[in-house]
Amino acid sequence: MDLKEYQKLCRKTAKTFESQEKEIFTWGLGIAGEAGDLAGCIKKTFSHGNDQKPGIRENLGDTLWYMAMIANFFDWDLNEIMQENLAKLEKRFPQGFTEKNASRNNSRIDWNEK
Image (cartoon, rainbow, N blue to C red; front, side, top):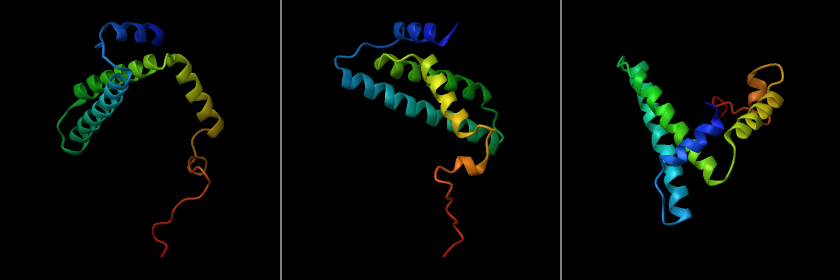
């Protein structure tokens, strides 16, 4: 399955809302909630020794579903978004990741400065 087909199938499982405002609020808040759940599972797995890897996987899927619904809302293609993101990152990191290229204005805050 590709992302375009996934987006189409996500629409079948989505609730219909009485207003576009409520719809995008639901998708936006949904992705925030799922990302929080994902973060909690990672924390429990690696900080508490409580294996939550199945929850990490499930919450990645739920987050992807909300991403697809946000893209559907704006009639965007996730494949194009993915390609645009990679092009941006390749431009920013042409030789691979470096901390210098990662700092937007090549200026970092020195928290030890007074």
